[in-house]
Length: 398
Image 1 (cartoon, one colour):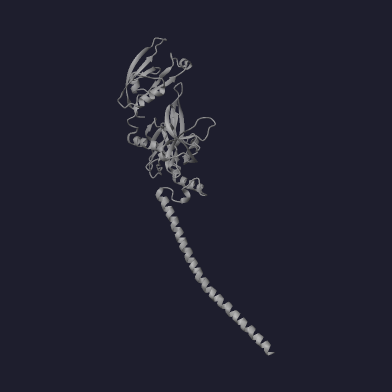
Image 2 (tube, rainbow, N blue to C red):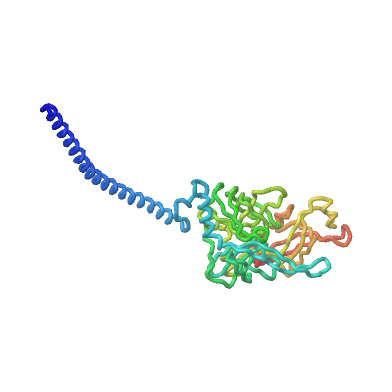
């Protein structure tokens, strides 16, 4: 082999050795630097993870302190965010046990004074762990047995603690402990557009039905059975049987009790709710006294006869405001007022509408004297007499 060829081979060998060493060295050096870099990166990621975890915990803690029910940011909003439906489900899990179904049985009489059984149903709201429940007075009115059905399937016969027909609120008591009372909210802070959750017993057989919507109006005035109520309006679905059930806000707090839905055929999305701020003082009075104290009462009901046709149908001589009826044993009855008396003046004020009679009495105090100038017709037209009757205002205990 020539010297030049040997030199060439030696050069190749050296180059190969250098290349192998360089490759081996780089591999070893790279392994060390990569290990160091990986360790540094992991430490950084772990620190970042801890910081992020701390931030999240802070958000949850802040939200928890501001709301007694919602403890996760994903459930604070019912409308926005991908978890809004889950948020509603979480809230319902917390409040569903606070709403009960109510069944009422009684006895009524037909035109021939024959008795027959009656049955009605509605909803109620648990307001204390030891068995106090609120509902509408019209749900239990006329019943002699009231049965409450809890969400867990148990049923109890309820005692009527007290009622207020004026407010359409009744307080019941069942012999049970460890119930889940509704958390009381504040209806004075509500705004149109706020979210609502309604739970009740629609149709008297669908216990625990949940519907959702918004507050669609505040301080809406409606008239039910001759009494005017100032209520909240919601577009959440409300049906017969929902009366006495609860309406809750997006924090699961009770903001009202369902009182009625519109009765107009074909109209939907109009449910009416008594505000909780109106209900609470009534509940306290009913629990303490069985009725709301200090309210004026004379036991008289008036009606407008504002057409000659109505006058003829009711066998009265002229149009005007008439006594429709008086309660037995009431201050009006004891003073001598009767059905079909024409009310001309009260305390010297000329009366032109039945609503004026109600307004005057509501502004009186228990013990006040009220003077009625009336016309009482006789057996024949023109044989009546003008009378002045003084009524002492009593206390409304129902």
